[in-house]
Structure formats: structure tokens, C-alpha cells
Length: 337
Image 1 (cartoon, helix red, strand yellow):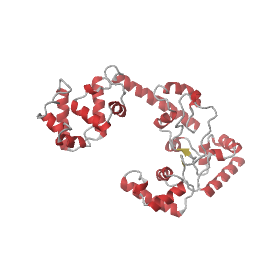
Image 2: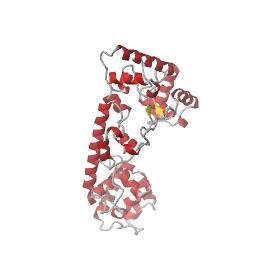
Image 3: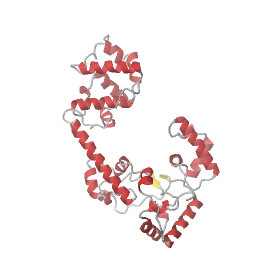
Image 4: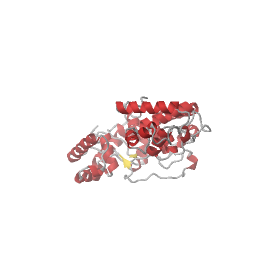
């Protein structure tokens, strides 16, 4: 990665000067006490020039410099192992040293007693491989696996994370993943499955949203899953997508034996996202206006940045502001199949 491409040529030259001084320093505090010296005057946060230079450095650049130091040392650097100017910048930006290390993708345990850089890289490689295996399981199941579905994989993953929801997010098991990997047209659906799906589509058009799985009789669920392999793929046959939790498995431990045996999923929709089904003209127009605001900002807008009447209408239709923003990321709703 080029750590300098996002800064001006003047900043780049100063950064190179700083890095040369850091590389040649026999002491990581060299020049720190020389208040009239070049390094102090140009780079210390106690001076106007130093503060101005610091303000022009982006987070990612500082993190990459921290990673570079870790590679040189072959372990997560302690504060005393980083040149004092960069140490001050990193501490000011990220507040706490362990947090800066973690944000840079390094082990929080710093110093030569921690893991070597090569060990950390090997750890990351193993973790990425395990996440890849989890994604493959999700493809085959056409849904997010529960820890009880993949006990052997969980045994290996718990070294990295105890919260199953965090692992699900790290693996990228979101709506986009399943749209690409877990749905397909089912040819020659039997008559009963076809009738069930038409009834589900009709009900969705009446309510303006897909049904939650729990709202559908078990007999219907079992028939459709047998015909289409998964609930998601059953809904796909009639142009629908399942209602999803905003943060699935958010309180699920990776060891399924530590999870309550009879836990019931919440029936409320406030913590869920779903695509609207055939939204009316007013809603489509409101979503287009909100999309224009989003494009102008270059990010998802906050409610305070949107005209009150606009966000109130959309939130009433969608149930929550989070679900309003979900529509923008998913083309405004489910259309007629």
C-alpha cells in the first residue's frame, strides 16, 4: 500500500523527512526534548507547524506506518518502540495504544513478548481460510449457519472470536452474499408448492412486506423448503426476500452448548430489515429524493439531514430508519415477479 498517495506533495516531503529521521535515530525519543530543534519545531504537537502537519494525515496512513513498524520489529510495537513523533500522533488520534494496534489489525499485546509479525500473518491467513469454509457452508445451507450446524468449525473459530454474530459479519454473510450465492429458479414446482407461494405473494402485497417465517404455518414452511431447499429460495420464486435481523445472532455464543436451548426469536419488526413489496408512487418518489440526498452527502444520511415530513413518511412505511436506509441499498423494494 502507498501510504502517501492521499497527501499533498508538501506533506509528502515532510513525511519523508520525518521517516528518515525516525529510521536513523538511535533513540526513539531523539529530538523530543530539543524544543528549539528542527524535529520539535516542525512536528511536535506542541507547535503550530506540528499540529498542522498532523491534521493532514489520515487515519489509514498512521495505521499503515504502525503496521510497517510491526513488520520491522516482527511483533506488535510497544509505545517505546515507535519514534516519538509518530507515537504522539497515533496516541492522539486513537486515544489508547491497544486500540490503535487492534485497529491496525495487530495483536493488542505489544512488545517482543507478543506474537511475531509472521505468526500474526499466519493467524490472519488461518482465520480467512476458516471464514471461507463458513461461507461455503452458508452457500450449501442457503442461510446463515447456526453454531450447532458447524461444531467442528466453531472449535477452530473460537480461538479468534466468541461472539457468533461477529464471525457472521466478518464472513460477510449478508443479504448481498445470499443474493449472489443462495437463490436460483426452481423448475417444475409441484402444484401444492406453487399454490402456497402464490398465497404468500398475495399476502405480501397486502401487507407491503414479506412474511416472517414464523408467520407462515409450519406445514407450508416444510413443504416449500423441501421443494426449494431453503426459505430464502422459496421466497425468491415469487420475487420476495426474507425478513432479516439487523444484527443476526447478536447474542449467540460460538459454543452452541452455552446458548439457551429453547430460545425464541423476537417477533418484533423494529430490529429487522426487509424490502418493501410494490411500494406506492409516493414512497417510490420519497425514496428517490432520499437517494439524491445520499448521493450529495456521499454516505447514508442521518434523519436530521432530511426534511422532517420526508423521513416521517418513509419511517412510517418502513417501520424504522434503519429499514428506510436498507431500501436505498436494495433498489427500493421487491417488484412483481
